[in-house]
Image 1 (spheres, rainbow, N blue to C red):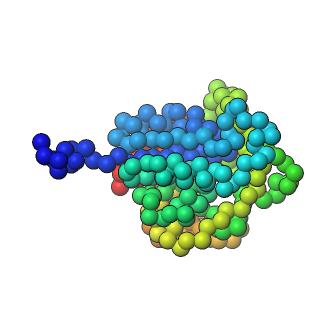
Image 2 (cartoon, helix red, strand yellow):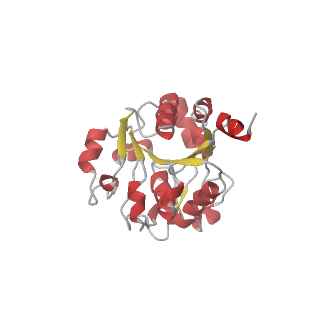
Image 3 (cartoon, rainbow, N blue to C red):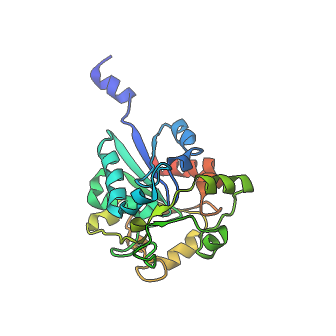
Amino acid sequence: MTSQQSTSSHPAPVHVVLVPGFWLGAWAWDDVVPHLRAAGLVPHAVTLPGLDPAASAHDRAGVTRDDHVDAVADLVAGLDGDVVLVGHSGGGPVVQQVVDRDPTRVRRLVYVDTGPLVDGAALRPALPADADELPLPSWGELADEGSSTDGLDDAQLARFRERAVPTPGPVARGPVRVSDPARLAVPTTAICTSLPSAVLAELANPGPPLHTEIGELTDLTYVDLPTGHWPMFSRPAELAGVIADAALS
């Protein structure tokens, strides 16, 4: 077999980097990863700095948004092949900032019930400056904020709360910083779970209430996957299918 034939029979891998939202680690993607592997993709589930169960409150107090972005950017830099970045909830602005650093390195962005923020916006700007961490709120408080637990049974909710780790305070209140206009041209898929795409499209402007720049993206595909805010728990196989379709498109 010639070298050219060998290369063509073994295409370069497509890496899918899975970045969870607040309070979650790599474990949140456990039911999604096998389906991505079955689709021929190479998944990398991430536990961001300070979100490891072994981290202490003191450790978390010193973790910044830049630390989260650096961790994902360093992972991407070590991968050989195409890269698709998937960000869920609070992980969305993290992958947004990674792309901003090098828009040419990422094949596609996938936002799962989240989206990119405008420069200077923060997810929890009202969090007091002396709050070292943000614990997982009650389910009622999350629902009031728009984070629906639809699709999760009592056992799943109990597992979530048992394994949840407080998010570092500097991450939660830290502003997003982006500056390269090329980030807006990276192909992007927005998977809409707790908020339908028709509603998100209406709210897609740089002002309140979302402070998102999703309306400025030039290559954007909306996909509806009706469920709650945590589809990796409520509809993992379907979520993996949408991610795989986006990654291979």
